[in-house]
Structure formats: C-alpha cells, structure tokens
Amino acid sequence: MSEVVVIAEIGIAPGKRDEALAGLEQLCAATHANDDGCVLYALQLDPGDESRVFMIEKWASAEALQAHGASDHIREFGASGTVSGPPKVTLLRPANFGDDGKGSL
Image (cartoon, rainbow, N blue to C red; front, top):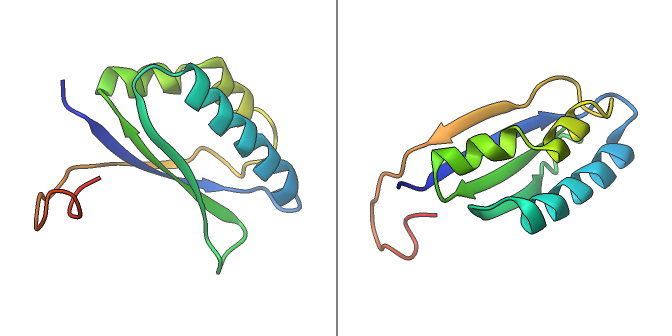
C-alpha cells in the first residue's frame, strides 16, 4: 500500500467566503474524525486571493482517498452552494530529494 498526496484547489462562490470557511471547518473535523486512512488533511488559505483555498491531503492509500471522496461529508459540502464548482484535484508523486524528514510529506 502506497501513500497518496493530493492538493485540492477549491473555488469559493462569490459572497460565500465566510459560509464556505465554516463548512470547510466542519469538513476538516468530520474527515479527521471519520475517514480511515487520513494522514493529513489541512486547509490552507491563499492570502492573495480570497476566492480560493487549498486542501493539502495525505492518505494511507488510493482506496482511502476514494472512500473519502464518496463520503457523506464530502457530498454535503459539495452541495452546500458555497463553492464555485468542483475542486481541481492534483495527485502528486514524491521526488524523494534531499533529507527524508524535510524532503517529503
């Protein structure tokens, strides 16, 4: 089983930033509490663009990521009307350069 690292860029609907952030806070809590295989699920804000945020994710396996994507809390957040569309999800592969502790997630 190989870990999976993901960056998800989430667009926020105009006028919905506060509501979206509240929903994302709930989403993080539900993911941390309920999703087996969640190693890292950390929301990052773009200080230069309030219309988007980034979720940095690390999963124990592709199957754990797939189960997260099919979860009720993901469906509910997606249907909340606070996002501008589906997230742009990028799966990453480690380069393994440098020090093991500093060069990989």
